[in-house]
Structures are given as C-alpha cells and as structure tokens.
Length: 167
Image (cartoon, rainbow, N blue to C red):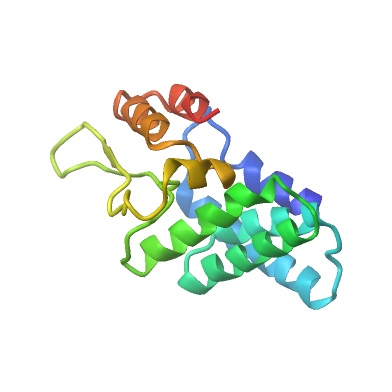
C-alpha cells in the first residue's frame, strides 16, 4: 500500500506542470490496485487504511469518496490519529461532488473564466455554521480564519504559501 500511496502523492508534487489527463489515468490504476489489496484482505494497519483513503480521495465518483471516508474511519478505529483529517476531507469532497455544501472547509477549487488569465479560488459551497472551530480542531481541520488566509494565498497564486498556511 505504501508504494501505491507514495506514487499517488509524487504525481501531485508542486514543480513542473501537472498533466491531469495522465494523472487521472494513473489514479484509476492505483484505485484498482488498492481495490485488489482490499479484496485480498492485505491491508492491516491504520496507516494502510489511511493511505488507501488518500488514493480513493483522488477518485472521480461519489462512491470513491464514500469509500475513502470509510477507509479513513477504519484507519482512525485502528489507532491512526493522523487519519482524522482525511476522514473530514473525504466527507467534504463527497458532499461537494453530490452538489451539497461542505462542512469542514477542506476543499478548495479553482476556475479561470473564459478570456481571463486570472484564476479564482473558492471553498463554496460551504456551510460555515454547522461545525464550530473547536470541533474542526478536534478533527485536525484548520479554523476558519486560517482557511481564509489559505484561500487568500491561493488567490495570490502562491500554492506553496497556501499549503504552509494550513500548518
């Protein structure tokens, strides 16, 4: 599972321009490899399940995100406290994909209007009232003020700063 996860993360590293059509195909291959490991009962540790959750978080269907959420919950139940963030993020991504408001604020998306060179970033739709900052912190999710700074960093076009903002 570790090798599959490492490759999933490697292809997303900042640096050279990412060809998302290629990444999408290799993501699908990694999901199939992970499905086989799941079917064979080859995942055992919380870390195995957390890494599998990340692979399915990079899916393209609502069921991928629900499976990712389930895998993250298994990771937490097996004693991997670092998996709590991916559990929140997978639920947000699922909600976003079924056209509902995210509740933790983990998902940022961008668009470039036709004829424009400026990219606009957003977390919308986002229900900021349902989950308190105190509860967000329990789940390893940044407070809303920090999320706002991260969004501003993305708006300035600084991916590296935006990633640091959440730490």
